Image 1 (spheres, one colour):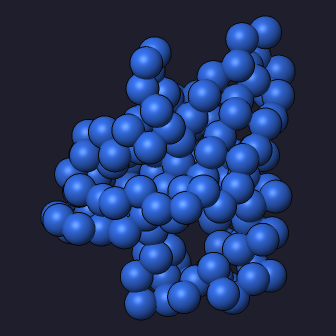
Image 2: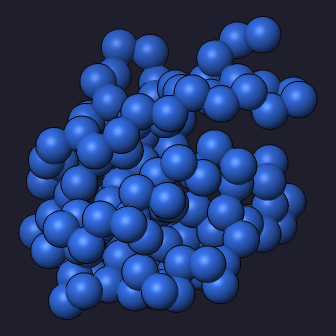
Length: 133
């Protein structure tokens, strides 16, 4: 089974984290996730993330440190996701390539259904307040 490589962003603002909702027709449709997308051939994970956030949310970001790498096998595909802390430098996030966006606090994460691949990162986000600073 081929591994799909994905970059995803952790964008914090005033104690809240930006999450996006997958389109209903997409793989894992309707679930919440961290914004980002599939890496294209010849593209770095950081370049992928900047491009995806421009297309999906209409924003420009700086891609900072990698926070987590996760590999997960779904029945139909395998994913490797690199999560990076990002900072907004231009634009206000809009749901251009996703069903919805939401800014949430740590205690609100459990109210949203996420893909199984995000479980370990979600646990870290709930336990480590310093990530939210």
